[in-house]
Length: 315
Image (cartoon, rainbow, N blue to C red):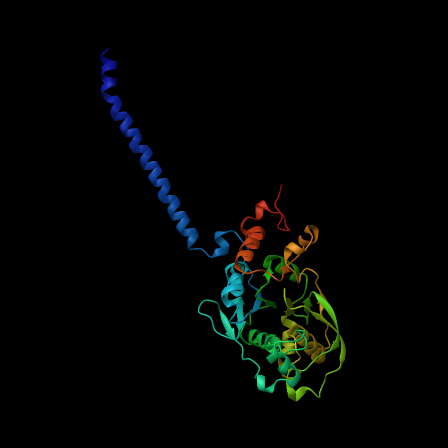
């Protein structure tokens, strides 16, 4: 009886003590979790999400004033986060406050081939028949990268409406020797007339060619070994209309090297590729801006355990 009365008097204290202990444990756990999350937030994006970081491939992304806030920023906010910051630059006609941008000088329209200039001013004609300002930008980009990024083993050019699975690209390139002169991309064959951009060069070469070139949309890549040989010779080349054909012809004229075909650099949107083929695709083109890029980034990277290698939901 006495013991029961004693217990009855002490049980509120016991309950209170347990409540205090539980609150202390919960508070301590919350504080530790907060510090853990804060520590993760201070880490680079790729470490926060346990994703790879590409450190030996330089990416030069072509954009312009009209697309910097949409397509280019989409690259920067998605797959661009998986590239070492010093290895990613946007090449544009205007600077940008957020994007790491290199401004490349435009070709003076007054010096352009009169036929190309006329079609350009009228906004008419097939893209091969009017002046394309980006025609010389690739040479400017590769020259800048060689001069400013000595740590790069590979140099990748793509447009701002592309999506590159950078880890797959890095894995693929490990099969090649970057010290050798290599020009790699998804190749097509152009049969027709290459048209010089500058009026002064019109008489030099407006002839039919049978040219293999790597398509520039989703991207193509040059090795350090090729750029080392090509950089001193770039200024010898005639600038032709169309940047990817211009690069191919210049490399062929100066180094007598043709591109190695890599079908995984796809020139269309991933939804236009059959699921089986999409598994092995490295890069895509014609991406529709921020919303589209974020969805692809989620499928291929952030929620990768819920999707297969082609970006399709695992049943």
